[in-house]
Image 1 (cartoon, rainbow, N blue to C red):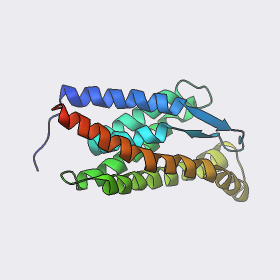
Image 2: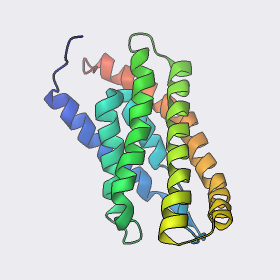
Image 3: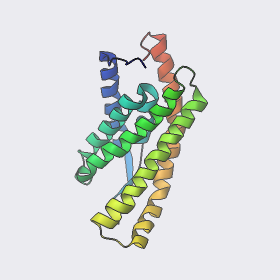
Image 4: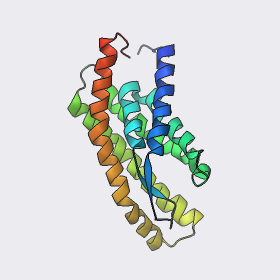
Amino acid sequence: MKKQAITTKHLVLTALLAALTVAGSALRVTLPIDIAGTTSFHLGNIMCALSGLLLGPWLGGLASGLGSAIYDLTNPLYIPECWITFLTKGAYGLAVGLVVWKFKDSWGYVKAILATAVGALTYAILYLAKSYFYNGLLIKGLTSAAALTTVIAKLPATTFNAVVAIIFAPILGIAIRKALERNHLSL
């Protein structure tokens, strides 16, 4: 397998998508559920998926994880968990990128939806497991039943964020990819 060099263009697009992930994460409505951490409706997941769609698995995972972790560093509520966010949101972009790069030469809207759905499911599982084990059992010291109740309370926002990303990231990804190709900037 031929190893591809990371170019200045790759670094700039990775930084740009990380910055867009910070901005998308900041566009949020936080729900008043504070039993095992907070939960929010936000647009950050769109940018995490878009990172994987445009940059592939490694740089897409880096952009989505780094951008989400940087956002966490802007809010004292999230600072202690920024390292977990880096890993879980990084896995979001990584999963999307892995699926898309499997079809690198022939991906379109349906494959972008599939890739985004895989990334959303990967992140949802990791986020809900973190909410149950880390926030619920370890940090808050809840019983298993109480920790499970908090996970159930997080399902509507988690599902909403996933669905919004599955709808909008492929649309943006295809439009941006076509624009990049039209301007001879394809990755």
